[in-house]
Length: 135
Image 1 (cartoon, helix red, strand yellow):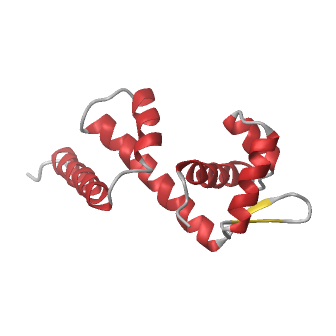
Image 2 (cartoon, rainbow, N blue to C red):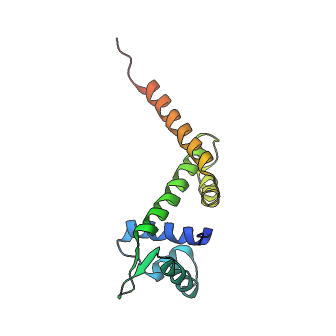
Image 3 (cartoon, helix red, strand yellow):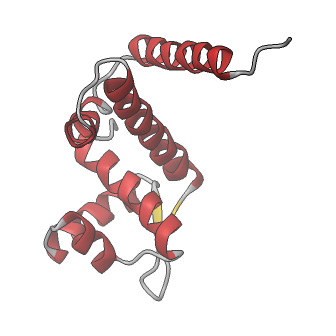
């Protein structure tokens, strides 16, 4: 089954909360996304059924290997798209973050790869011109 945009957002949120807090519970996700606990409960049921997460006895939500891989992929896209929008297109950071959150779910691998290459080339170009001159 294809994971929908909302499912990817949940996985990304779980990953970020895990990095921030160590443990993630449904209430943490509800607070972060400003959703109802009932909505979170339904979503976690779907993610669990699709084997993206497990829920421990104490209610701690844990990403499976499959879930962690997907969450990291979405988060990488988010970060790099936002960076590209800011650096290449000079979009404001807040707008870039909002746009990246939407684009990360629909961008093709070809376009994403090209964005990565552009950012790498720009970084190496900057490095070239910030090195002290040999005399």
